[in-house]
Image 1: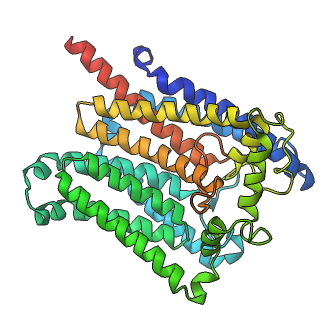
Image 2: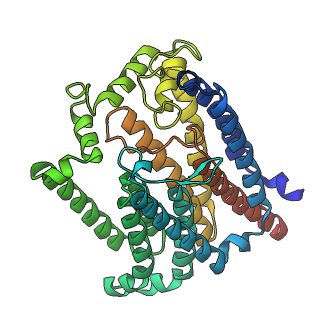
Image 3: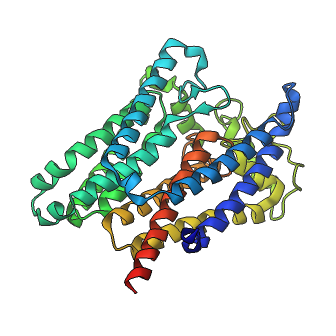
Length: 392
């Protein structure tokens, strides 16, 4: 196909390498716990390999579609409302069957072969929705010179964002809500809204967030201090003092990183994954990589992610169409925010959020949606190259 000749290898090659590393590390991180649980040592290996293959196929399928398909108002609205409906269903499952909650949160819909996590679709749906709305309002936002007029234009999409964030916090999933908030702020900043209004909005939200967290810690009522999420804040501040309680995950993550050193103890030879780190093949997979492959392994994984993110940002700067630029920045922000939240949590710089490491952590929903997002980016870039070629 002619379109394949225009594919961006700066994205495709790191993406495929990350998929391969993810399959290997999910197996290494999961086989011991699977064995102890009486299951097959390769169960997560096979599932992750299937997710990776399906992700590649989905990426290719989205790549060959015409751009007008995912720019369609109808398609964007269907994705958005499906994501919102899925978030509501998740809350309903948590209420109807409290025993299905993990660490006090209900975030998945069981579908047999894997658990569907609506948050992942919500991220992509939000990016496509905001890109569509803000690009369609491009000229009107440029023409407005007062904050009331700008507010009138952006209030409807902001209400959708707030609705999704409220639904996520009701699960509760504060990490997911934070990712949506960051994506929204970046896309608003990248739109044609005057910079002074973006600065005012961002500053106000940051001040409110800091003030809210400070008040919670100073006057924390029992209903808050008893929550798992609050304990994670405390664990971040005093991990070793709370090693026998909420700080256990973080302390074992530190031990894994320390054990690995520069070159690691060898693939498969990690100790912390053997009953010390909870779910080492998901949230803490980078800690396993640190222990087994050392700092070198971390640099390789994070370096490949950085190449993809930086490349997408470059495409956003180069893009001639406001819609394409917003999609690029949205996808790059989604990848960057997930990486920062995952790595920051493992290092104790921020509270653990349960956010997975893109393309590496075990999980079908994350793999498929992120692959779809890259497919959209590759499609937009290939289409741009074809248009330039025709004009030239």
